[in-house]
Image 1: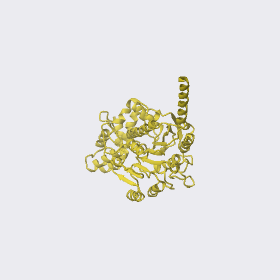
Image 2: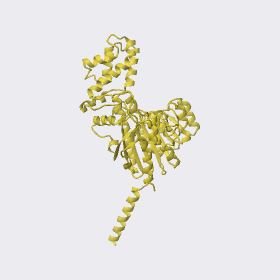
Image 3: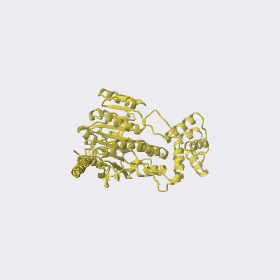
Image 4: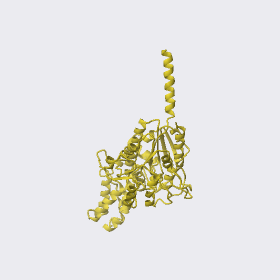
Length: 439
């Protein structure tokens, strides 16, 4: 009897394991680092002295990002490829290269009864999130893009405010049954209902002591999951657009904090996956690389210098401009000292050569306040380049590059995310994984 019972128990266990392995995929989490290439990842990991959580996922594949014409993509074309599975022209949202509307994976899942959520630190009608619900020939048609939200039935939106005529767009959403909560504490006031937009710009922490009333991208992710969770399934896209902003401004100090913020959001997704391992597919990817970051000569021992930068380059420029206006700064030498302070170089000041490089970019020693204001951005960029050169890193462009990015995946069907891989393959492979793991 005991032997028979043991065999029966073993057979039952094997059946349960087999059934679990083929459980239906109900939850799809897609994380996108805008402008996030392999160099940005390696730079951050070298500084941290450890792998990012996303880099520990079971699969990793280099992923092509070129647009329909085979040239360097923008976020509209790459966002459309990731969302809809087609290559298109730069600037185009949710349409193919002949401007024919294409249904996104999110829309197709919505038709199957899934809830859909979009979270981003960029405006929710910006190119990457917009590609999941809108169909417009130009990414600049911000109000028209926002107007498509109700028709596509996106259940949850969270993160940055809308761009364009935001107030009119919020009114339109409310007229169509959405609850719009625009406040730093929006996540604590979410209603127990569908159709919510929690407008609270995600906060990226630069130091462990730094606090904010605004939620982080990870907190936005957890709130979105809680709001969307249901037995029929959900699709959630989470984007950090500020990794892209850091690339465009060639700001490695900002970059490392934004990459960590993205990885913390991924960790929030993995925590949910741990509770539903057989039903959750999680993907981390990027739309393209921004900045042409070169780390071939990177000096790992000096990278902690990036942590000493006090604020992002745009904020440094704004403060310097105000100080010039208030006559608190009046000379090129004074500006150089201000840049040193903001970059955390007070104990490691610019060398004579570096100082002269920055002063020359500011218009020279004799430049007056008007001239300093005119050349402020040039001087600040020169200061950043001098700092970066010490670290053995260099940006080669202020735009996008054609570098392949990395796609990681975990969960049922993750093995499908293998090379060769193009960004337009991602939604198709998600659907293939779902079909292979259907009940």
